[in-house]
Structure formats: structure tokens, C-alpha cells
Image 1 (cartoon, rainbow, N blue to C red):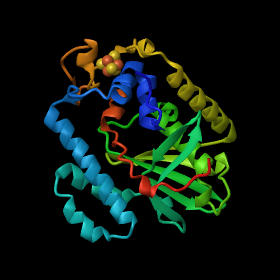
Image 2 (image 1 turned 45 degrees about the vertical axis):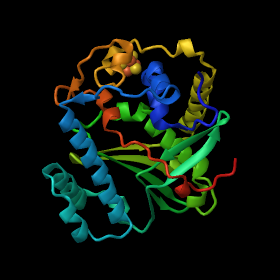
Image 3 (image 1 turned 180 degrees about the vertical axis):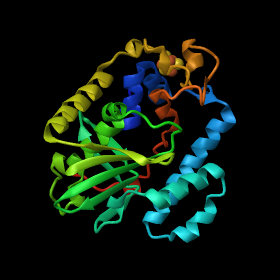
Image 4 (image 1 turned 30 degrees about the horizontal axis):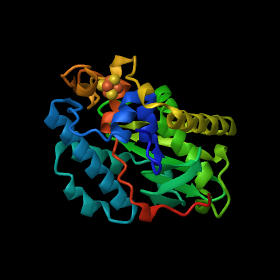
Length: 279
Ligand code: SF4
């Protein structure tokens, strides 16, 4: 089996391939069922994922105009209450300035003969001047800035905003130097990570992403092999397919950046929201 003809690449699928080609194959080509749990304790992991979804929805509702006071009662859980309180106290100042805000927006562009898509938590635009991509993280640990700089999310989000964001900027494509990625951590509200962009990185991302997609599409089935880096395996739900252990990784016993993927919000694509892009 090969990658389906209508498959659309995203930061999550590309990150899976980079972390482990086998995981990409199991998840997106075979669509393997009944994966193992990703982390222990199960209830705590699922609880935090669910709270992360609710937090993202609360912020989205606030950004479209629902008052804080109406949303605050929804934060009944202690963790959610803390994240929401941090958001209310420390939300990034750029959001409050005179700028257009685009929460939960999706962009896409053609690359390597396929579509590359991204769903953003928030893009704030001062037309003709700058655009800031905000991403809310509810992970227990704050990843290293260098890790975030190299993750596919950073590369895809900034690249796609240049490629496909002209309609947010009065019809003019953004210059890479006008774009910044801003990771805000609900557990570390005063320590965001800001990652500016530039033309050299943009051209590097364009080459890298196109080559990566071409590599995936050209790979024979037998070459989607398990990663050599077994540190990816304890928090991977496909362990049983690869004989990489039956025990899930334990939350709280690591601050490893590989945990990031287990807390990502799954992109539930609603293509009604995607702006039209000329291919
Ligand atoms: S368990 Fe390890 S080798 Fe198997 S798919 Fe997951 S990351 Fe890859």
C-alpha cells in the first residue's frame, strides 16, 4: 500500500514521519486500529488531553467576543481554572493591540504535487506590517526553544502563512521577516517562546518540506521502517505493532520534548473554514 492519492500533509503527519517512518505508515497509510495507550496513567493523560481541548475552545470563544466573565465558570477543574486564570492575566499583549485577529483559521497550499494544510490557534495581523502566529500549549513541561525551532509545526506554520496568507494582508503575500511564531504555555504564562522568521529560513523550509513530501511519496512500503531512536517509542500508541514494549511511558517521569506529540490537539479539519487558495 502507498500513501493515498488524496492524502493531505500536515505538520502532524510530517512530524510523525520524521520521528518514525513506521509510525507514519501505521497511522496514515494502514490506518491501524486499536493502538496502545500513549502514556500512563491513562486517566491522567486522557484528562489532560480533554482539558487541553476545552482550554483551546474557551480561548477561541473569548477571541470571537464572548466575555471572560461568561467563560470563567466553565473552568471548573483545578488545572483548567489555573490555565484560564493565566490566560486572563498574561495573555500576550499583541492580541490586544489594534490588529485583526483570526482564531482557528486554516490555510493550505500545493507543495510537491499534494496539499499542505495547517490549522492555527490564532493569527494576529497588522496589515502591511506584521503577522504573529499564536499557539497555545497545555503541556506539563515547557519545551526548549531550539526544539520548537526545528519542529515541523514551526516550519509548516510560518512557511504556509507566507505561501497562503495574502488574503489576510490586503492581497499582498507576507514577507517572511514580517512573520513571527509565538508559543504560549498555559503552565508557564510568563515564559513564551518567540520565533521570528526570515527569507533564508523560508527558502530553506520550502526546499525541506518539498523534499520531505517527495521522499514520503517515493518510499516503498518496506522502507517505512521503525525508528532507530527508541526514545520515541514509550509514548507511541503503536508499540505493540513494533515489539517496542508493552508498557506506556509514565507522565511526570520525563520532561522529554518527545512528549509534545502526545498533547497535540488533533487537527479536526473543517474544510468549510479553509480560505480559497489559487493553485
Ligand atoms: S513504537 Fe517506536 S518504532 Fe513503533 S511506530 Fe512507534 S515510534 Fe515507531
